[in-house]
Image 1 (cartoon, one colour):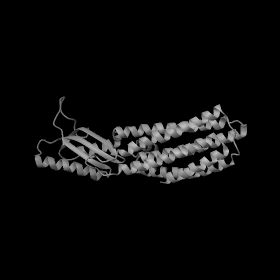
Image 2: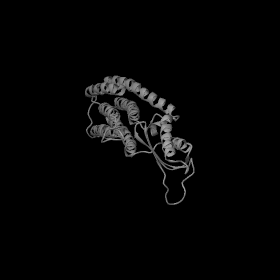
Image 3: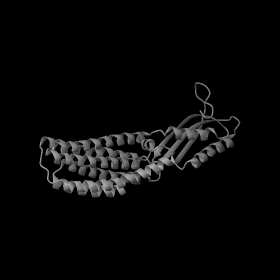
Image 4: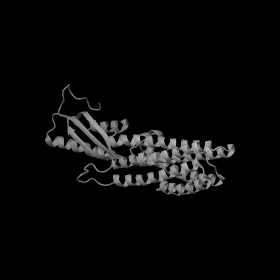
Length: 304
């Protein structure tokens, strides 16, 4: 919400500044801010859709809807902003225009840097706090986080700050040299930055939409809990994946002591499910079944 409010105000101000100055870099930044605004709207949809409860047609819930809408945002909105910015820069190179006094542009860019830096700091703090909770370094958590919304907000705010600096540099060099080339090149560079961010976010959202495996430390922790329960001899098969942002699905087959009767087996499986749910509030579903044997020998020992 902070990013949406900041980007909408900045987009309108940049459109006015672009019309007054004739700067391609400023117009590219206006496209950038409009793309960010549209992206925030789609991310709000992603958040609301992913929080819907399970229903008859979606027994696993709607958590992965967050990745679908975030993918649409990264491909549709970011790429659109990137292409428009590059197109504006190329057009300025082929048909140079004239620029008016850049004072308005500098003022708008300065305000934009402040507003977008506030939004960037808010997104950074949220990601940093989550990284601390999971005992990870910031950059590691940013890469591995299952939350596409906070990742997208941070990435777009960082790109916005960089884009403002590029635009200011392009306008300044145009003012110093009297040539429109630096301004046009700045617009193209802004488009390339947007395109890079779009591709990276789309790739990550695609991974989670397909069904990305949980990080190794989470997988290891789940394995330790299951293998450590009394009566479990081994865990031949286990998969931990994401049902949505911060929502884990644990599927495992366990090899148990032969001496357990039906009631004991039922109690053991229930104990595993309860223990996993107590260990982490992010475990949304646990499916544990008995390993019935397979060709190729005995199952691994507990903890393997």
